[in-house]
Image 1 (cartoon, rainbow, N blue to C red):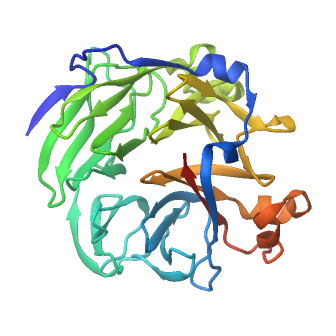
Image 2: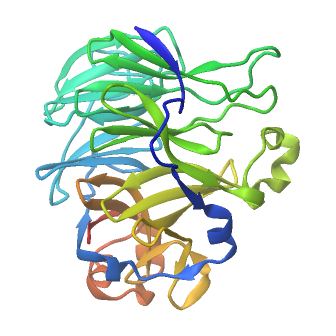
Length: 364
């Protein structure tokens, strides 16, 4: 096991600078249907054993969909949205846990790894419990998995004791719980409450952002770290002193990078506006034009984000060149008269107790 400091390896070319400040200040009408080759809607079956809260994460392949929600549930569906089963469950019996914080599925779709408070639970792809690994670090909660089946945990960005000059931000393990590497950040703060970051794997690379750093860092398959992109939030950025309850009236004026999704032509960045009870808004970066779009609905600039047939679309994950997102039950039921196309027909079969709809977009 060895350690490195984040974003330290030199690059032959300067990383691109992505200007979020300019994009947020000048939102643009955006029709995502002009940038995709196909859209497929998948209503998730509503079942007596499966009532989804807010969707947090989706992992798909050609055969299955795994969906986790804000109440710590993990459900398995067919590729057409039929409910199969719950993986694990709340309790103290074999294969049960107190609360799920995250999950990943390996590239071969053979095993599911569920992160809980204090343990990593391992199930086969059918949801059968296999084993668990105990963790001594209670902050092992947010994770991703790479193509070599290595697990990456990112630590919450928290204030450090005065005099500290660094902290361990990423831990890399094999699937047997053997520590392979730690990655250290030297961007240290001494005020404000802790914030969980996200970490993301795609195409043999892993990406993460230090909360108050200017860079999106990239880890390659040799576990070397460099800077993938520079991020400029400008006046919209949170400062460490803003992470205090006495400043909550100012939070709505600020954004933080919540997560990213990568495609050949585009990058999708989800921004969190505010903090507690915050909304998440998508931005789209065109690699070819080197231009970031903060989108609004075509005929209504007050409605920020991506819209499909009149309904809000929240990107959550990807599969190869497919963008996967959620259309909420509320949007479909409460605004059914404003919808068009396939979504209008789907909404007529739903009520407020229905599970949401996934939209899968083939990016051009």
